Length: 276
Image 1 (cartoon, one colour):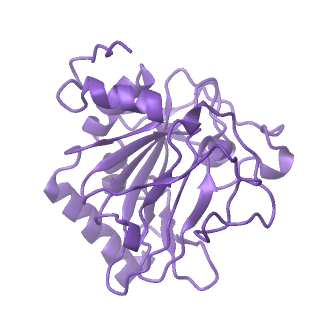
Image 2: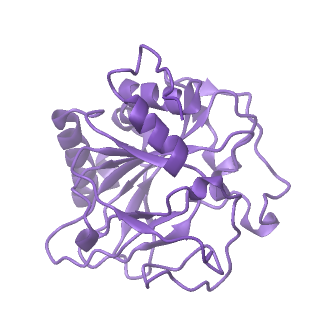
Image 3: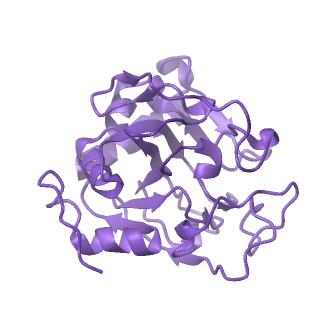
């Protein structure tokens, strides 16, 4: 495959080899999109939110519980309630890399922050565009490690090249893959083998919305696996599920041309617009 020509805005941020790996495998890892100071600021902001509570921040930003034991917590859509979080979501270096991967400018649809403390379970294998329902192109995630993410504290697992598959529908009560969480996909495809994707603090993983991925449990007793995540669609997108409206551009402006599907995605009405 011929290496793509990169736009001048991103040639120093992502290499042709990384772009080729994204196109072939469905993901790539990029260094240095957030400075060390920015990573520390993100960490401090969400630790303050967790420790002091929502009263210090905009009252609209809340935790979303993932499991009844409250061993894994996430802040959902913090960019809607905090200017700082919005600026992290539309970080110009992240947006430049996304423009290269999409082939056109990106729009921000979602931000999340995962805390994943010691003892937290993993997240089942799934595909992001099952939730976002972006069309005509799929979404892309930018997953930035606030802590080094290793096998023992619950790193990502990805199925290389699975972005070539269509969206695979979930099943109620689906079996977990290696007990890493309730899989959204059942039966799990026999031709898919998840592999661990370990990253260092500050590295950003970009992966396709059709890539099958999940995460392992945090088996440590003293280390979290915190992550700042954005989900993006390209500016030519015609729709994204209602949960992700309003969508904003790189300048932080609301984009109003997108439809919000109301008639069911590829897995039927019962799954439409589910929160990721």
